[in-house]
Image (tube, rainbow, N blue to C red):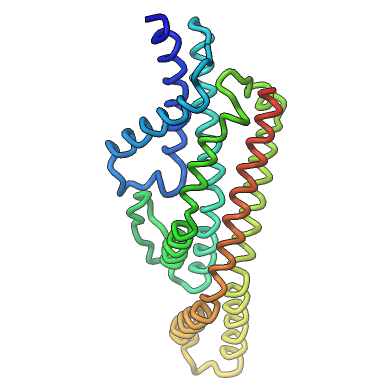
Length: 262
């Protein structure tokens, strides 16, 4: 009974971090995955993590235990949000392209998140998801949450780094970097479509008899789709670079929280 009294609180803390990570992490947060499977998989992973890192750990069983629960949920959410933030780069780049092409008026429902998404953004997101699964990126995410206990133990003090703004600084820099990546990913198509708009503007001035509005819609769709097909082979290497940035951001976040937990 004494062993159970010491082990169950530690087990529940591990379970809190892992389940909160699965709430927001890419791939695992999909609405297509049944909730019962997510809970069962979280429980199985918690058993593995507890047998690896939790045996012999002791936690206080007073009101400070509530703070440990909040800390574990916060660590899981921070890790999951950082990974999701990099994956959102693809959706943002697709949204910028859709605005230029004119597809932003025809959004579709993403079955993974249940949110309304632009057409090109949805297409690029699924393509990135296939590349991510093909390179076993979901395994790396599981490694990140599992070995996060090497960096941030259960009894660590993460609140100190959150209080002095170090974690916030990492998140802000990651967000800014993800937006820059989205602009770089969309730049070739956006620039080409902008030049198309400039050409249509000259056409409207030199030949007013043409209905530039009707011609422009068709021309921009054709230019956008043709350039998208031309640039398609380079997207795989671009996604590889994007996922490398994701894992680097996770490593920096764990490093900062490790300093706070030390």
